[in-house]
Length: 149
Image 1 (cartoon, rainbow, N blue to C red):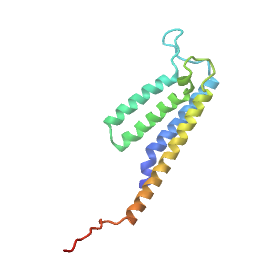
Image 2 (cartoon, rainbow, N blue to C red; image 1 turned 90 degrees about the horizontal axis):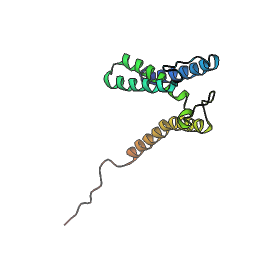
Image 3 (cartoon, one colour; image 1 turned 90 degrees about the vertical axis):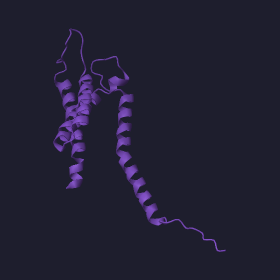
Image 4 (cartoon, helix red, strand yellow; image 1 turned 30 degrees about the vertical axis):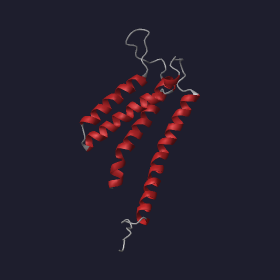
């Protein structure tokens, strides 16, 4: 149970990310004409809101340390990451063209980052296991030569 309990924030982030990114894609497909313009002619993309949400989540994570707060902060963080990475292609190609959210370069970078993120724990675990095996085989006390006179 302790193993699952330690994975809850990561699962919360992943779930919030997937639901937010899927919801944003669905919303933009079904209602592409709906957007908020605080100043006529000025459209603010949802990745900007995601960056602000990530900032708030980081600040809250520094302040609150309880288990309950961790789950809410993880949910907020997943929401921010979902909004931000949904328009990742715009980071690489800033001029906005309606309907273009992803470029080939943006998709390749995200796939590479996800693969690296998935492989990091595996590599780290193997390094720890080989280090622990080395400690089992290595002598615990250094051998000293004694001089006889």
